[in-house]
Amino acid sequence: MKFEKHIFICTNERVQGERKSCGEAHGLHLVKAFKKLVKDHALNTSVRAQRAGCLDACEFGPSMVVDPEGVFYGSVKLEDVDEIFNEHVLNNRPVKRLVIKFREK
Ligand code: FES
Image 1: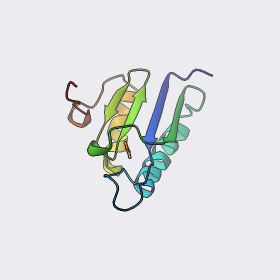
Image 2: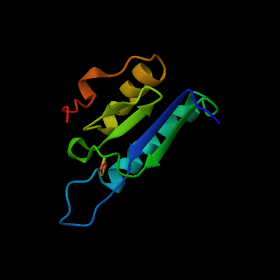
Image 3: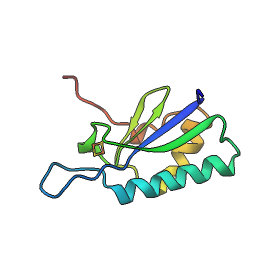
């Protein structure tokens, strides 16, 4: 099935001593919050929110990506979920203040 919006939220947790990770607990809270909004808006057939492994944006974590645009968000807090959902998922307006600015390699 192809979703109109597919939200991947990093729930990766590294073992101590490795480089920074987004953290499973925080990621799972975000997943739960997005899933609830999808359900509340009855969008289950067009929007999917799910946990993901490392998105390779660890230094910006907690990280997530919204497809098909491929917009990465960083430092996402539970309080940001409503804004990302209302602005980006429902209205195709990425939340600029949270978009990760990757440096060119
Ligand atoms: S651990 Fe979350 S992006 Fe790498």
